[in-house]
Length: 440
Image 1 (spheres, rainbow, N blue to C red):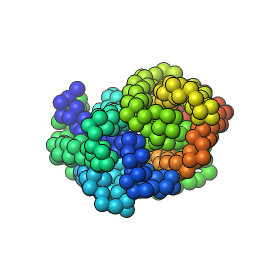
Image 2 (cartoon, helix red, strand yellow):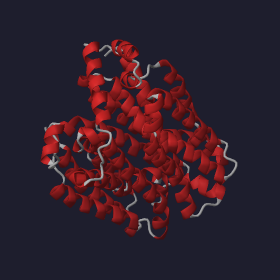
Image 3 (cartoon, rainbow, N blue to C red):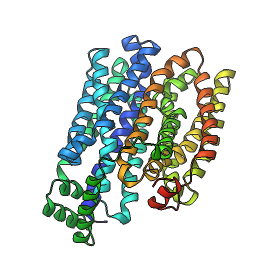
């Protein structure tokens, strides 16, 4: 691979690592934050969900500055948000200050979740675009694992009441690195074309190792013209009812699986089952490791087994594991099975919903409304994420089992919805999918 392309991809994907780290690091601090600020279950839910509110806003609005000033320049602002958030959490003088810092971090997460993959996709040659954009998802999972590992290692130091400040503040290190590296990569050739800076775009294509810079430049110019021609196409119309249903439901079911409730409150779940704090931190590392391994497996088989098949397999596996977790809490014994159920659950989720969601959403919409459709699917995902993150501590207060019964039931529902209503997209061109969904 061309060295400049490899560097730009690595830097763009680093936003995914920060995304994953900032998303999961809260898991190791929830108990300490509850003590430090005397939080009720409702207040703890607000603390966790505040970042997700920022994420929703960031994801829904990032495209505006990204188009006006470019993905690279906007990512620099988002990297600064990551830095401010990490330092703000580390030095938070009140609960309200902590909420503000987490909200700012959420803006960074939401914005980078949109612009990071887009930046990579706009630089990458067509033949390697899928693999290169996939590095962003892999970095998210690596970031989650590093967050759990960081929490465990900081916990071993014995920092007492300041421990949570270090656990949240350590994110400033990769955030500063991300910010600095963003000043060493070029703007995307596609954005340059939208700004009528065609010669600069040609230069970027050449530096990225394009085999036919002039040909690719002509394709970009033609594509931009076509998109401008179709920008008035409304998404919420009857002919798009099927792809809208698919995008909204896959985003909702992704979170109704309980994945982020588990990732955010993992240490609390282990504590409720009787694990010590240090043991819970270590178990979280095991869960993060399985998440990474299974994500890599899912990405390797998604084009072989198909999207629908993976979703059906995942529905059965995650439902069984979630009911197993609820059994552990109902029985108030057999705690040794909890780690097994959670690790296997993560494996089933990562090879199914985790690997499929973003690919599937991008495949069911025609070109002229794909960007709008992805925004709807992403918003469905993040809004449901925020609702569950907020309500989980309150639901789990009376019995740790009830939320997992609910999540398991939702996976049973997902199985039948996917079985009867979801088309398989593997092996079909985007134009063929448009015909299969009855879109003229």
